[in-house]
Image (cartoon, rainbow, N blue to C red; front, side, top):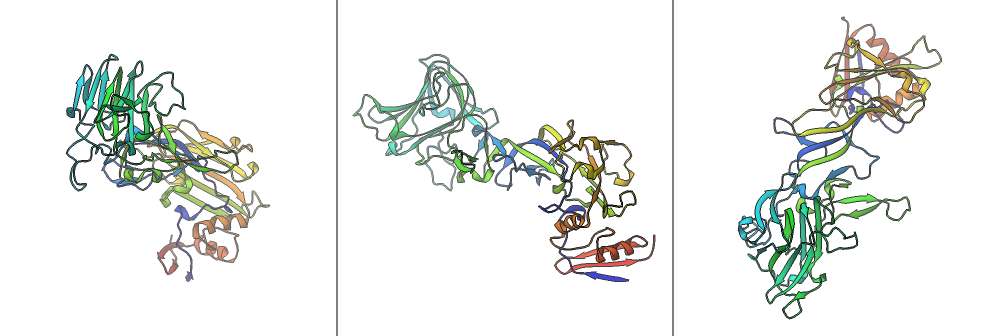
Length: 471
């Protein structure tokens, strides 16, 4: 017998899908996942990483959509191409011949200046002064109309005392300065980099808006020197006195005016770890950046599964529940991938029930199943009693990466609910392995129960199913 049905190719694993109308179970491993080395040149989303073979790979997960700013990073963990290009002395097509982050170009007095790295591993300049009289000077540059530029500074503050400063000095002795550390400073002090030690401190300030001091003519002209002085140990990953705009370190979605609407807030001066709505909100100069220790609030959902072998779904009528059209036996296999570049924090297997609690006739969890067929798994633990009407249920709070977890559901459904689950996979009306679901489903059940089946999909044309006898 030959049955030909035109249908949209199935997009969801296992032939079932999720939509606003479908009540498909969607067990989820909720976790924070940290990618040790995230590369904007190779990746399109925060949930990509290099596998152990060095290939760009996407995690089978989604960002937590209940978190408006699910991606967390630090400014001194961002390694972008021109962060060490000040002063810009060479054509952009060539390597710059100077850098304010090169320790060999500084002259120290009492302090020590050395090449180092930030806590996250980005190459940096270390200034270490142990007395208020210690200082270091950089003078291998000249910026005309220096007052029009922005001073941009990103640093990890390892230790500090007093009020160490950074000065920009012009040709006749006038200078402007910002304070690198002041324990008494508040958020309103926009000329202070930090009031505590820690990583990822950023300050951006237009030079012309700083108070001019010194022995010159009282006006700030070209910038000729940078002088750091005082008692501070800091690793500087960005130092620029030439750029004529602020850098954007990302954007957040925040309700800033209590109107229950989210506004976009541009982040220019993060202090420590901060969160953004997505990696595509970083400044254009950071589009190809390498970001170390990028952390995402992620959900490894059944809806993200891509392998049919990780999904099992069977619908049929049941004499045990004659008042219901369909008895659904649905299973999912979930796993947190392992790789040297991945780590997880507080992973938990959770579920947000889509049906009333009495519709869950049996829910079980199995751990360490490897690729065992769903029908051959024996070591299940029942969690049915957890389905007590709660909006979210914890199924297992001791999840380990590299371990397979199977969640198995026995649920009672209406024909309409089964059709919605099928339609969500097919992108429209279709047929699946079910009985009692209408004329097409009846034909499907009649054909598949007594006979073997071979199915082949012809992309773009439809679905041609050829059935023949045999066991």
